[in-house]
Image 1 (cartoon, helix red, strand yellow):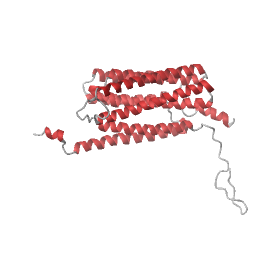
Image 2 (tube, one colour):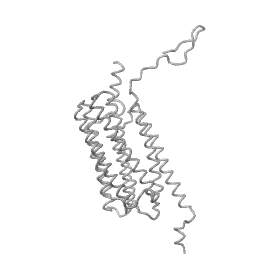
Image 3 (cartoon, helix red, strand yellow):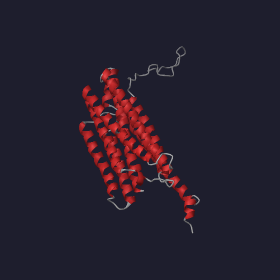
Image 4 (cartoon, chains in turn blue, purple):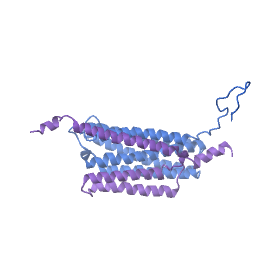
Length: 208
Length: 124
């Protein structure tokens, strides 16, 4: 500590001469959490836009004509299963078992890919029927909201592949564990957003 | 204890610590139940009143979000010395203002608009 009395010959010190050491990555989790919260605000805007515009069909198709709740239920199951398998990956990571961690990550990635495929199939089906984003304000806001979530899942999968390569190369070193924990938060966060999507967009849409 | 050890300790036990197998399984079972019931309600039309159904499925969503936060994201008031929770509370307040504010203002704007072509056609 640099608390000194100022005397005539001593230079006054206005800062701590030695900042206490911050361990590398010590605040990564909090920082990543703050990023997720800002991401949450992006989704809040998109939800608000959908809430306002969701009823403006412009004499086009309404949710009842487009949504297949069975498909959405399967999709939701995929994302939920991927959440729990990522949890298993984290548990095996704690035990330092590289093979099992990689295995669970691969399973998580497959569930994520299944989710994306179903969502893309749904989008393709809608667009084939003429329900494109240009059709009505409802469809614009629908594709923006659900598409943004899908993009997040896509980047999550890219990140997961990257980390699997990292773990294969360097093992479960501290840096890789920190990265896997960040991706864990990201992945579970996407599941939380999806709860909002299937409730607010799909289920409430069918009730309109 | 060196700084290095301390960091390692923080990474494993501090902040967004991992759950246990039991925690993950409880969270998973709860979310399956909390997902299945709203889908069942809407798909079968179990309750005739649409507004009541909407309120109930929204309540289920809120509970499920809390379940995910606790069991999957391992939120607790102590993580990161309380800063995670503080950021979360701040975000939730903003989200509530954005959502309820937008819906409220835009609904009233629509309600107070000049009658559009659509309504005019239906006028006598």
